[in-house]
Length: 378
Image 1 (spheres, rainbow, N blue to C red):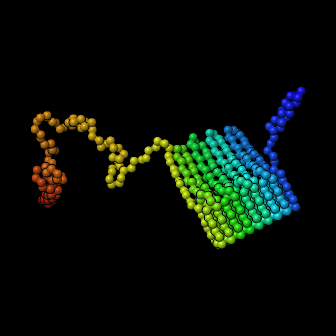
Image 2 (cartoon, rainbow, N blue to C red):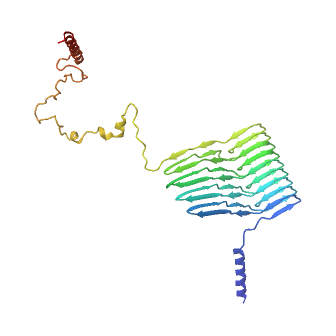
Image 3 (cartoon, helix red, strand yellow):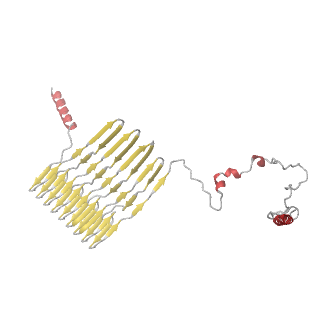
């Protein structure tokens, strides 16, 4: 009997642990006015249609997920979503845990298809904290604002919009990924600060813009050809601005103190590339003035004929093995010229006199005879 009771108790404990779900974030508001608090949220709206061979579909799965509780104390108009958000003595603060959304659309008809998508993620680790601040906006995690006004902070973010299509059996595609990396943004006693990614710190400053390392680029492909152009700005590190006005820092590893109108950036790198389909050969192009295009296009045309290569005599040139060598016969009337000298044309055979002179003389005598005959009527 005792063994059966222990078995039943073990079964109940196992079922309880096996069906337990992740605890939801608790929302707490103390001494606050107009506070809006929402725990983790996930939604997957979608729609589709199909009629007469034509299909279309769209979807936009979106989620906000965080760990910890949402707490608002002595605050006015605080908005908190997800978990791990804290607002104390602040006005108009908006805080959200990491956000992920992947909208997409596709369509097809008559063997053709097209699709597009734009996944976006705003992450970050840690909680969002706004203390004695006004108009603070914090997304992702690891953001802190104390005694500041008009501060916007976002953790590491990635987006990868892409399109693709298949038209007449040919596939084409293009994508434009972009991302901002880093972790942790901190604004203290500052006004008008913008911090993206992470590793950004601003203190007692106004109109400061800071961003972690940025990676962006574009790529496209069609058939067997592809090209890409990735670009990076910065390689990490921290951005720091103190007692400054109008400072801009990008990429990490930047420091500004007591400055006005300062712009700082990490190293910028780009590595464009492109290529064709495997097996393709470049087109042969002759060098102008050096190589004949005909010879470049058909090199076999200049090769000797099989008969010449085998030593077979051509027609019209008889040879006798062992006999005396004779000079090659020339056409009757052709002027003999020394070897190596250029040929002389328009000469009377065997005389070397210009042929044109005798042609003109003959025409003159002919004209004189015709004139004399007409004068005497004979």
